[in-house]
Image (cartoon, rainbow, N blue to C red; front, side, top):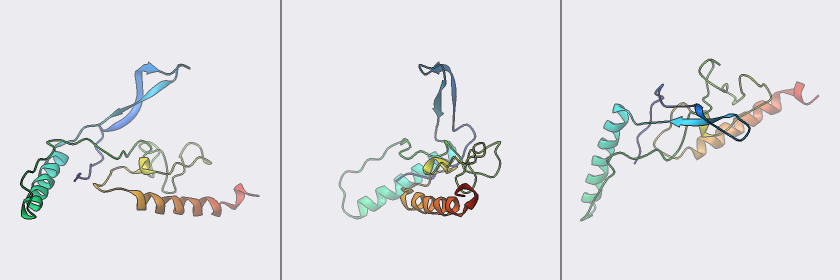
Length: 138
């Protein structure tokens, strides 16, 4: 079980000032760590999971002290303010109006369960928005 990770300011994707690609463009750098809230939630969920496993007859149980994230979020955060987000509520980038980014990277936080259904719904909603922009198709 994984806890929801809150959108901590110091968990981010930025440009690495020390590493560049072959064209001289700075490479993206991911900085992430669990914070006190996530550690407490992880311990709580581990304790609940252990109790469930023991109640169902498990003779040997082990848990991770601190698990790593298994689904990324936040690299292209969704929000109304271009100062702290990349896309608007329709996954349209603030800087390039005809560029859309759809996926779990637009979520400011990630729940402890797979986001597949939410990403699918967001994709459908974004596609409907694009189709409604008649001026792009005239």
